[in-house]
Amino acid sequence: MTERASGKRRARARTPRAASAREEFPLQALRVVVAEVTATWPRAEASRLTTLDLTHAADILLGAVQAAHQGEPVSLAGIPPFVPARRMLDAIRQAWLLGEHSEGVPPPVVVATLRAMDLVMRALDADATHRFVSRLGSLDAQQLVVEMAHDMRSPLGSILILAERLRSGPGGVLPPIQQRQVGLIYSAAFGLSTLAGDVIELARGGSSLLDVQPIPFSVSGVLQSIVDMLRPMAEEKHLGLRWEGPRHNVRCGHPAALNRVLLNLATNAIKFTNVGEVVIHTAEPTPDSMVFSVRDTGRGIPPSVMQHLFEAFRQRQTPGEYAFSSAGLGLSICQKLVRAMGGELRVETALEQGTTFSFELVLPVSGASGTSPHSEPMFG
Image (cartoon, one colour):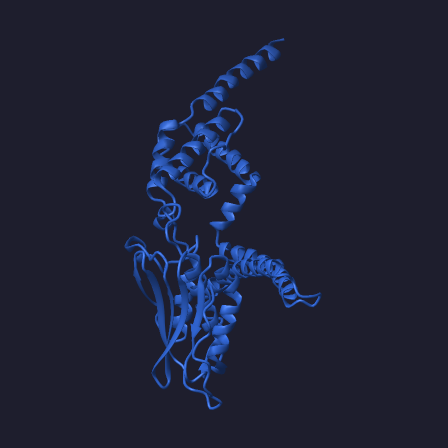
């Protein structure tokens, strides 16, 4: 009886201490840690995330840690989806482990708080959204994005092949309305495929489309292929679309990269033009050089956008604001490719009058050179 009573007294003595460790949540000390973590968040990410986003996510994480510390259910609801919550919690945990802010906190409470953080970390790992965002913020983020872009290109390639077969009419000539619809399907799929290619190209540094050595190619052939691809988009908006070719047609250069740049620029010009036309123009300032330009009669580019126009993954601030793409990839890729070919992409714009993108390249006339049609008829 004496030993049993003694055991009960020891058990009763342990219970208050365990309860005390649970109840004595070091809220104030952790608030200091959280404030320090949010204030020192990397500037590159802080520019994409508002202070409100970071503070809100940190408050929810702190509440989840407190709930876990007190043995209550953990809730992560309300954390902004693109805040790297797992990395933020890990930063809070590392700061807590350093001990600078946990001085004066009883060791059992420090340990209990770390265990609570581990429970919240497991909850984050179990959440698919936060797991995905965590990987985007990791060292293999670039590889993840490239893999996703490759996965997009395969089905889009199938759509392009099927649409091209329908458009070529092996089963019979399609009525005009169906030809137009198939053309729009082809253009939309091609635009998505180009975006996927832009992602991969950016990951590779922007110059992998260049051939090892310049090769002879037909400038008018490149221009005509672009117009053929974009014709359905222009017709849908009742826009004129034409090209004006050079006198010396066959040049030595990098046709794949040139095609990518002009196609991106012309696609964007159509996107932001509602009335008028889009013209792909060439000029020959010297026998061995050419100036390419894409001119539209669209709404122009606001001065506030010009400063960041060539930045990849820029964030559009307001709906409808001018942006080459929502990710800002297109112009970044164009600039990289033009520079890889030895030129510089320039822009001239006037609000409500239009925009012209241009660049000059050294393209020697090929020995097989001949003259070419000077322009392709306008349609609209």
